[in-house]
Length: 467
Image (tube, rainbow, N blue to C red; front, side):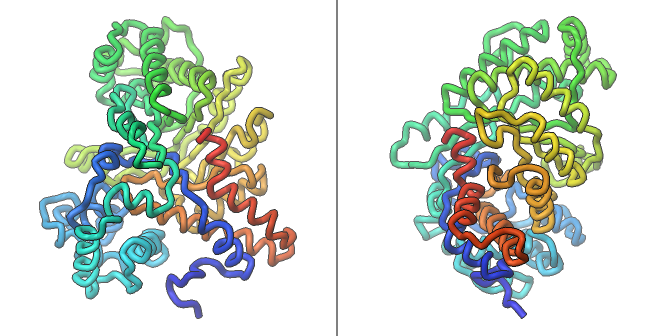
């Protein structure tokens, strides 16, 4: 029987152990999609206690606690930080099989040197150990955690109207060698069927100094902001969509839909899709000109619990996997851009793992010689970034495309301790490759295998995002 969380955790063959320890473990991290606040990095924020850095804003942990019957006051409410941590510690032992159990113990081991097991009985011991280190260890500040995790690049997620002041300050700070790149997230200007659209267009008008009366005015305003982001080191844009759409309509029809949305009038699905398609196609053309990467996240059911949405707002742990028919529309969207010669480097993420195979076959239909792996199947996302989900995504990608060109893992996280997820991914990757080798499915050529592992862990992302 294996002991929990040894140096060979998840590495079940000798080949896997060799690949991880000799090749994967030492590679830098390109965390090209996350939700870290760049202000925290600039100010080199320190945290008073483990609850602030671990539970604050982490809806993965909040979902776990709710599923264990914990009252909301101990999750997002007014309970003390100690009480919240204690409730989480009492919950964690029941989460056998959940990646959160692995992530938490990897983080405790890597950042705090704690090699025990977190539960209700050890909660006070862990609380005091972690808090002492957070308060007194110079390496436990925001910058220290990033540097100590061997991170080479952080890709934040940023509103088009942001002034990017913190990115600007970080870029000018030669004492901090990590690239902190903004990512363009135009969802509020695209998703006209969601609340806040009218107010957002007013904000976009104020930011750009443009009057927005037509869809072409939206295009022009977004082009202004894309140019601004590019001047501040942006490498990527990210679109969060309920589903992928492609419904090309006239500018007049798109403008009519936009104006209905601004007035709060109901829209048909066809009207909304026409406007969204017009804006997304324009953005994609701009990304292509600048060499940016377009990331599309889809098949997520947002805020299905209307009572809790009204109480807590979005992004508080109530989203779930959606079953959508994005396949045909994704093909049409990419074909429309490819016909013009305007298809940018693109990464596709579906929250529904049932979409793995069609995504992986789509890749082969739209690749190009300008970039190896120009069209990517993004890493197992959100509810899929567990051992099973990662293995299924990697296996499907290997079966139907070229795994060696994969750009690897990201955290998609708000926590500075989440870099342990890159270690988790690397262990899963090496375990999978090791099993294939030891089953006689690939030669035990460690030079070639090691190069593949290092490319997937970092080198491919470095090349893909022009780091």
